[in-house]
Length: 98
Image (tube, rainbow, N blue to C red; front, side, top):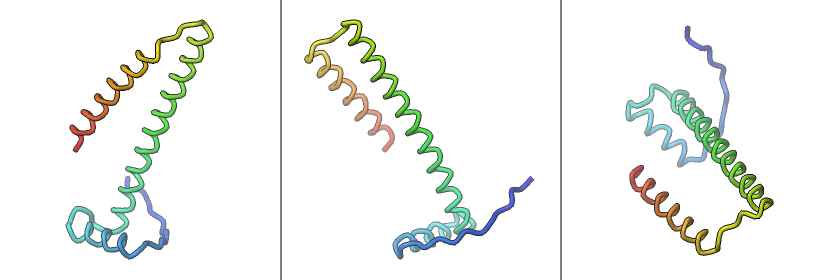
């Protein structure tokens, strides 16, 4: 069953209007509404991923606080080494995406 659509009017800057028109002309999208709908779906996915990432970060901070309360600490050099390792992993993952 097809979902009904309601009309929404938006004002876009000239560069975004040109980009929108170019996407429709390319044939990848049937209409400007299709472009905007797809864009909003991608934004929703990105927002959900950001929320999950933030939840993981908050949990890691909470775990660190619990460890600190128990007196479980690591040296500053261990922290720096772990950060360097994580940064290298992140950079490798970003290169694979590009």
